[in-house]
Length: 242
Image (cartoon, rainbow, N blue to C red; front, top):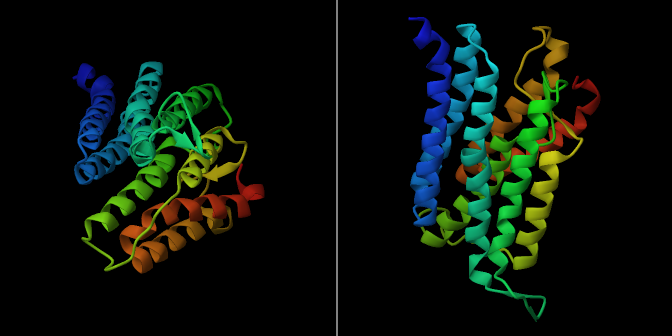
């Protein structure tokens, strides 16, 4: 019984890792819809592993390290792979120059900085009730959300004649900004409650209301907009995050 209690959260974490692996394979094969399902499943499992560990009082250093390793695939490799796929059509030409390698490999800069962010997070004891820099799940929603919207528009399944086309320069700029946000000093709202006082939770309330409105108004297109709003509202409430 103690074995199950001590390892249930770790089993859920491994489920997150498995889902991330499956999602990455489907993304490589162009099945972005299945990847979206896998990301959602990984997000759910990533939430519940910590919840279960706290509920069963089974927190451990092993669980902490395992969580980061699982996140590295689900929320580190997958967003890098999504950017890889978006950059793939541009070959090796940039600003009229022929590069000795294909531009798509720049997409994995996001994966490298996701790894760095996870390592920093494990060593930083200040991030209990807020995040310092954009957390990897949110970054995954942003990058994969953009990829998902582009693919959905190109397939003609939704939004009528609406289309979005990003130049290679815009995608590379997005890659750099995304990578920087992961390790930036900007404090980001975390849905962890230090107290139940209303005034202490204004940032979280503003975040929830905004997210709901964005998704109601924009539906699927609103997925990456949610993260942009998250970054904006976090910057507005910087002084209250502690």
